[in-house]
Length: 260
Image (cartoon, rainbow, N blue to C red; front, top):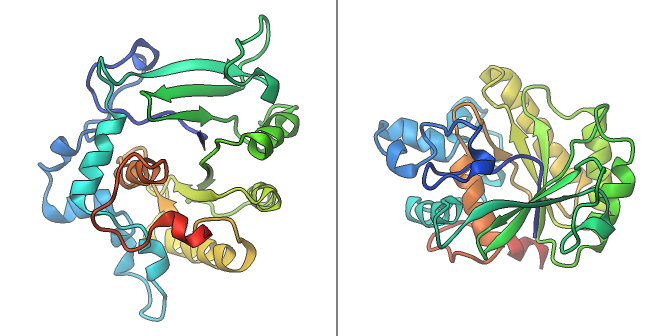
C-alpha cells in the first residue's frame, strides 16, 4: 500500500465518474507527449535536466538521477495508471482513523480523512490529509498510527513545495517519518512556480537535508509540476517499480537496494 497526498494522474481512457470533474492534462498520455520536440520530451520525463545545466560543476548530480528508467519502462508503468474495464482505478472508501481503514465501512456522520483508491489489483493509493496549519485537529492521532501499524505500507510520499523550500512544518514531518523508520520519498512540487535560481537553491538545500538528516528517505527527490505534467511519468514509474508491478530494464539504482 502506498501513502500519497494527491489525486491520481490518469490517462484519458475510460475515465471513472469519481474523476469526471477533473480535467485530464493534455500530456497525460506518453503517446501525446511524443509529439513534442526531443528536448521538451526529455525535460518532461526527467525534469532535473531542466536545471542541470545551470548548476555549478562542483555539484554532485548523481543523487538527482538515481532512478532513471528508460522511456520503454516509463511506457510500461503508464499502463497501470490507465483505467479500463479489466483494470479499474476507482475510489474505494474514506476513513477517519486507523480502525476505520479497509475493510471497514465509513461510519455515518464522520468527516472524510484518508481516501483510498484501488488501482486495479495492483495496489492501493491512500490520499492523506495535508499537514500544517490547515491540518485536521486529529491529524497526529489519525496519521501516525496508520504509518506505524500498517504492515502492507510500501512507501510514503512526502510532498514539499519546491517554490518556497523546506518550512518548519516540513521538517517536523521529516522527523515523524524518521522516528517511524518507514521508507519514504520526498516529492518536490510546484517546480514551475519559481525561477531556476530559487529552485536550484531549494534543491541543494533538499539534497543537504536528505544527506545529513535522514536515514529512511530515498536519496533522490522527485521533481514534479502538475501544471506542465513534468516529472509525473517518472514518479508513476517509480511507484510501479517499488510495488513490484514492473521490472525495469534500465535504471541506475534499484530503490529498495538502498534500504537493504
